[in-house]
Length: 414
Image (cartoon, rainbow, N blue to C red; front, side, top):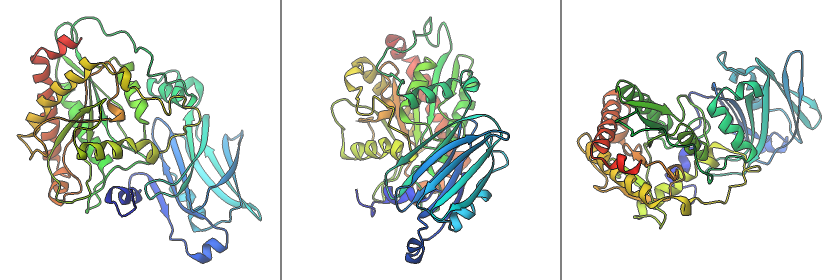
């Protein structure tokens, strides 16, 4: 895809909740050896991320110091510029891991970054090639120390993923005993798309997909939590990037009965409008629009930035592992949600579409992806910004969940 594609251009908008410092770099700047064009810090309770975006690949060395705890990064063949000098202003007081950031010219050709820490961390550094309008990146992820990871299921999954041990092709945990909705609560995993370094789509009014879908996800969780026979979990409940495979693995770890991924995507034409629901396909997309959407959503890992060096399943596909019955149930579930969405918004298509969405690949959990509306359509962008429409979408999804279980299809699956 070319950079004239609105989907790709949207990725340039990496500002807002995460601290961001941008600089337009002139040819003079390049001649001086200052290649860093943006610095971003994304704090979260799960992990904090520092990203340096550069016109050229960055060569680095990293080590740790104690008393106080620090992570030191030396970047070779680099000179200070205003982006780097302003990095100390990016650190938020509520960052759980980073206390301060200091940057200096260590020698004639080396810039040194010192991150003073609030707690013991396990740093993970990696580089990313340019993608979707974003230049070369050096990524510094700061995870809490090992003892903290063991008590947090999401952190444990992220650690497994970073080590290449997230073996989704292996059988998941044993199903919860009893029938969902009859003998025990129905477990629903809510997946607000994108997050952190990956903003998702954005509209003309600079509304960001990642923010809107998180609000809808929280509203849906609040509704589900009021239901005595249901229990909800979220793949993310803050502005943090979670890899696609980890989202799926978290649903399986929680032994979810249903998986709902929430989005508000863009299209090449601003005239595109309406709500849609998608399920997984193992035989190709059922429409050109579904194929395009799956390609853009599956690009999330590249945009959000994950180190693939230890991911032994990088090229592994689970298509052959997905049970036909699970896809059939996903279509039934999606149909119930789609019909309820049609009561609060125009439908882009009146049937559940299918494509190879990576986030829908749990082999044993009926999974759907809900496109709430097109954020690239100005009228729908305005709707998406309103708490009323966000609530209506959440209520529609809940109504679809209830109808699906009332139909008996879920009992047949389990």
